[in-house]
Length: 454
Image (cartoon, rainbow, N blue to C red; front, top):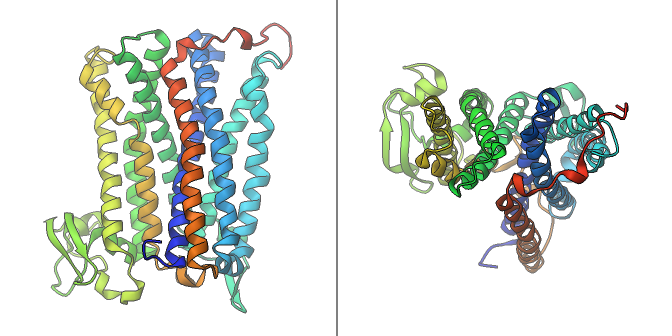
């Protein structure tokens, strides 16, 4: 297929399925926590807008949750079908971690999801809020175990290699490996940001259509507050994550920066833009700021960061991909901070719901959080290459022995089925969002407030 061998087709297939999958958990984590906040505020204030928004977004959450489960199962099967070498080598660690995710997180979510979605008339207010909170907690616990497994692949520790297989010797070290805290915080906050932008864009669309109900205004206001405080926090976490990556995966940082040579002995500049050339071992047409690379990554005006030519050619990540995906993520992050600040200024001026420029800005930024997440995952995963388990197992040694034709057929099948199934789910969600929170009649879902049940 297009001159690609089975190895590259397997990589493309996994990248395709995981890219589809990561969108749904990101929205699920953010919306689940948003729903818990909405219901908690409704219980405290009894203001109808909070309940209206809860009932509206719970429908979107349910669709995302379902599609996330389906896409996650497909992705998990590929470890055995397409990456048997990886499963054989590291299955004794990744297998239990994924099992813990099912036993602790998925069962928790599934156990309380029915009460959350259909329990308004069947349980009391406090028990329903408890169910919503447990679903939200389950999404975060799920992220905990998935990120523990992925982080171990980047910064493996707590193991021994015996007869060509990884054997865990310290599970605390395995789970709490050096990059895990930064990856977990970065992903969870990214999920909050993505959901805030998603919710904010939905509200902005209704406000631009002239629908200025209290529920729509509350939805927009809450999303802009979330963005204002969370986007700068994410930038701070990203800086810490970068410093951790510099320590444990310096080749990835060199590729992200497009930095090839330290022979001149000067501090490292920050290359804003350019075109890394892997064959010529240089970054062409670069626009750079002297000293700033050293200042950001070393917090020094004299120290240098590692250069790509310090690593063997076969150990270098694909710098052009990592270079631009990282800049896309950072650029979108700066726009998120800008949107939060502009919204705060318009709130101060009393024009939060009337300023057309702000509303259009928020509308266009709706997908920015998800695009930034995809760009971030491209940066971290392509930047890990050529390793599946960093320093222990190369990607080419992890792939299953499939033929080119087999992989081509399966990849095309994924394109068609995913486009159909998840495309329909996307269309349904957009339809529900366009209806708006005020179009959803919540009469059949009235909670029992005087039953005495909890």
